[in-house]
Image 1 (tube, rainbow, N blue to C red):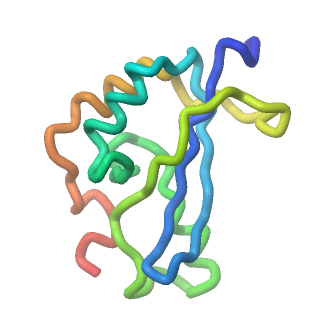
Image 2 (cartoon, helix red, strand yellow):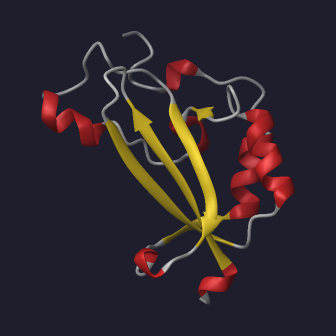
Length: 122
């Protein structure tokens, strides 16, 4: 697949102590300005989402290896960073899905379901 026909969904998880872990998803298709507007309008505060609700890999487990599991600093939200062009550093990433499918999943969210995250009761 040509890198010109793909883009990267970049996101991160940041706990209350500001420890961060980053994630990227390789998506088929090219993001349009209208796609970014959908994300901004549907994400909480324009950038926060529940990864499990969208079927996006949750990232907090990468921090758990330093704390032996969830801590009081953990919460339910992941943060959207960018929909950007593919770079040579993204070479070899597996295709997660398409921009169109991800945008449709996001559009379908009526309310963010906090209970889908293992941190909802912390």
